[in-house]
Image (cartoon, rainbow, N blue to C red; front, side, top):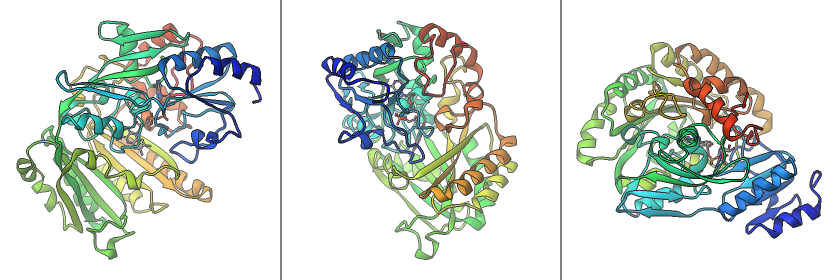
Length: 461
Ligand SMILES: Cc1cc2nc3c(=O)[nH]c(=O)nc-3n(C[C@H](O)[C@H](O)[C@H](O)COP(=O)(O)OP(=O)(O)OC[C@H]3O[C@@H](n4cnc5c(N)ncnc54)[C@H](O)[C@@H]3O)c2cc1C
C-alpha cells in the first residue's frame, strides 16, 4: 500500500463489483503469479474485474492516482507484462463468458478466457477459429499480438478472424471497434498488442472444424536431424493449406509410444494436424513417415479440443522461461545447420527449439491491412529456454541468446511480438515492422500519455 491509502481504495471498492486484492490478502500471491516464473512482481493493488464497468472504474482510478497499470488476460506473456511492481494490475481472468452464434458462425468472447474456454464452447457446435497450441494461454493477449496455431494455414492469423471488439480507452471511455466503427482503432488492435486500450469483448468469425481431426506426432532420432529437417523444410513449402506440420527438437519426454531407451535423449518430432477428411489426410502425411527411421509415432483421429491440449503437460505454469524468436520466409540449409548445432547442446531437459509453420492463408493478407504485418513469415522459430531453478538462469539464457544470434542471418524481417522477452525493447519497432509508423500515430491519438505501457510498447513520440 505504498502509494495508496486505504481511504482511496475504499472509494474504489464502492464502485467495483469484482475482487480487490492487496499484499497480504488471501489470493494476492496466486493472482500475481503468471505463467513464467522468472517474473516476480508485486502490484500495489490487484483489481479482479467482473464486468466492463469494473474495467472503466479501474482505468479511472489508476488515472486519478497516477498509477502504473498492467493488464492480465491469461497471464502467459513471456515478458511478464501482465503484472507490474507497485502499480495497479487490472486482472481480467474472471471475465470468462463465451457466447456462440452457431448459425451466424460468430463468437463473442470475454478477455479472461483461455484458449480451452473458447475452443470447448465453439466445438460444441463443430466450430473453431485459429488459436494457439497451448490451451491455457489467454485468448486476449494471443489475439492482440496476432495469434497463430494449427488452423492458421487454412483460416489465417487469429486477428484475421477478429470481427469487432469493445474497448475501454485510456480516458475510461467505452468504444466499439470494427471495420465500420472506429476502424483506425480496429486496425491497431489487430496486432498492436495492448497498446490502445483494454478489450472487454472480442467478436470472432468461426469456421467448421472437426470435431475430430487427424493429428499427432512422428518422432525421429536426433542423428537423422539433418535429413529430417531438410525434408521438413521442402515438404512444408508445398503442402496444402489444410495440412499443418510443426517441428520441435528437444530431449524426449517419457511418451508411452517411445521406447524407454529414447526417453531423455535428443529427438526431432513432427507435430501434425489435418482438419479435413482423415482418409485424405493419411495420404498427405504418408511422405513424412519416410523422412527417416522413426523412433515411434502416435497419430490418429481425435477431437480437436484434445489435440489443442496435447502440449499442455510440457508447458505447465511455474517453470523459468526465456524465449528468443525469428520469423523465416524459408528454412535454408544454414538455418537447419544452426538449429541442429544448438539442439545438440540443450542446456536443460526442458529446453527446445520449435518451428511453427504458418504460411498459407496468413500470407494472403496485405501487410498494411492491419497492425500485424509479417505476411512474409512462413515459419516462426522459437528457441524456448525452459528450466526449473534460478541457478540455471545464466547457462540457459546464454544458450538461447547465442542460438538466436547465430540463426539471425537466415531469418526474414519482423518478429512475433508475442514471443519477445522483457529484455528485447530494442526489437519492438523491428517486430511491428512495416506498420510501426502508423501505430505510433494511432498511439498518439488513443493513448497520448502512454497510460498503457506494460506491453510491447509503442511510444507516442
Ligand atoms: C506456453 C505458451 C504457448 C504459446 N503458444 C502460442 C501459439 O501457439 N500461438 C501464438 O500465437 N502465441 C502463443 N503463445 C504466445 C502468446 O500469444 C502470448 O504469450 C500472449 O501474450 C498470451 O496472452 P495472455 O492473455 O495469456 O497473456 P497476458 O500475459 O495476460 O497478457 C499479455 C499482454 O497482452 C495485453 N492484454 C491482455 N489482455 C488484454 C486486454 N483484454 N486488452 C488489452 N490488452 C490486453 C497486455 O499488454 C498484457 O500484458 C504462447 C505462449 C505460451 C506461454
